[in-house]
Amino acid sequence: MADQNDLESQLDAIRQEATQAIAQSDSLDQLEQLRVKYMGKKGPIPQVLGGMGKLDPAERPKIGARANEVKEAIQLELDRKKTDLQKAAIEAQLAAETIDVTMPGVGRPQGRLHPLNSTIDQVLDIFVGLGYTVAEGPEMETDYYNFEALNFLPDHPARDMQDTLYLPDGNLLRTHTSPVQIRYMEANDPPIRVAVPGKTYRRDTVDATHSAVFHQIEILAVDEGLTFTDLKGTIKVFLQELFGEVEIRFRPSFFPFTEPSAEVDVKWKGRWLEILGCGMVDPNVLKAVGYDPEVYTGFAAGFGVERLAMVLHQIDDIRRLYNSDLRFLKQF
Ligand code: DAH
Image 1 (tube, rainbow, N blue to C red):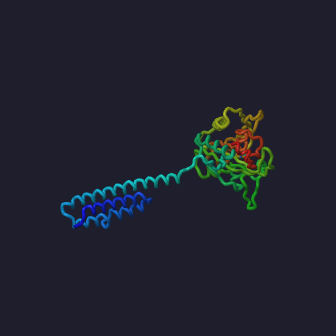
Image 2 (cartoon, helix red, strand yellow):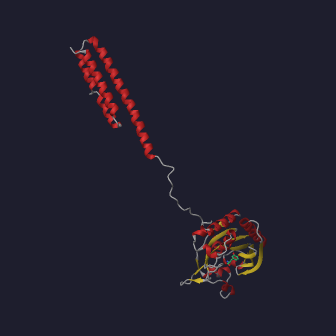
Image 3 (cartoon, rainbow, N blue to C red):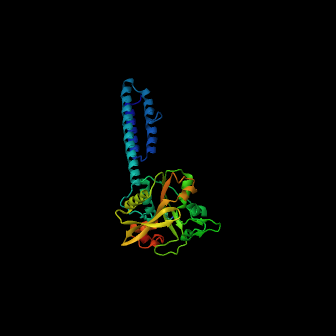
């Protein structure tokens, strides 16, 4: 006959051994192995229970109950340990991923817009606000778009106004953004409101107010019934938006593609500074693109972006805009 006490002490020993092993385990894998080992069907508890057949039947329920107690106790230990190990794993992960916010950062110099680009953006914003579309055209042009269609006749003395850079193939670098007027009108029907920013080129000797490459913004409006008053009002509103209250004056001038023509000066540092040319689009220009000058009239203007930037930012020498001196550029 098996001894009841003997089976009980075997169960106690299993419990003790399992408790110890669980306490010592330090990974979830290891814990899972212990679970299989102690709680599985081939574990030590069923083995002990197998010995019950030899017991006095009256004793059996006691041993059964005891075995269940031991199983529950071991399961409880397993669960507790599992929770502990999971918590520890999360804590270890958090510790490993902690960012030291007091560590000094790597300084990266902040980029910014060049004053010419920010001036172009400002000007375009104003014209977009007035209902204009923005368009661009090529920097390499043909004689036709740069001169002929703009009413510069082949022997017209006005061609002398432009110190043109010609390319070996007979093309040229555009001397102004006005050729885009022609390109835009060829591609679109009136009414037209367009603003055109771009680079322009001339054979100028570089000095404080001249550069061989410079920037213009052209505006063109074509519609029925546009008059010089519309041109004047547009220019006035634009300059006020850009500069705030500033003294301006219109001076009669001449351009082959406008009639009448004017130049506009702003009072800057006590002197008049010319910043744009403008006028009513010459009927010959409208004819060149197939618009009927009896129906449509238009006005146009060309702004020197460098001049606008110099006035906006109190820049005394145009060369500062080109020589990429960071001490200068960082001020914007
Ligand atoms: N294209 C002229 C220049 O570069 C500037 C100009 C004058 C543009 C009168 C215009 C205009 O649109 O109407 O000197």
